Amino acid sequence: MSQKSHFIEGVVVGAVLAVAGVLFFKSNTGKKIVRRAENWRDQGGPEEVKEKAEEMIAKTLKSIENGFGKITKNTETRVRNATRDSEEHA
Image 1 (cartoon, rainbow, N blue to C red):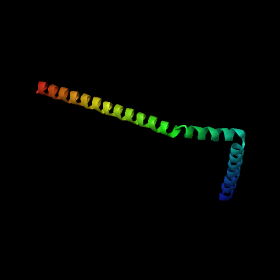
Image 2 (image 1 turned 45 degrees about the horizontal axis):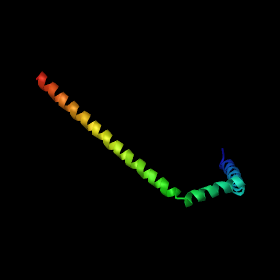
Image 3 (image 1 turned 120 degrees about the vertical axis):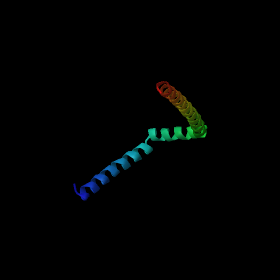
């Protein structure tokens, strides 16, 4: 396709998105959504999300540390077993 047809496609898609945006924000539904978002923000929404995210990060880090601890323990056990086996065969 030529660059001209891509340009026309872009103009058409942009126009459709612009009309959809205007209809959305001018409609009662759009206003309700904006109002709900403002209420959520005013009632501490972002802080609550931040606290939950921090909790999840802490739990994830703890799980990672536990996983690495298990890997280290298993590796140490395998090394000991391999060393013992090689000593027995020597």
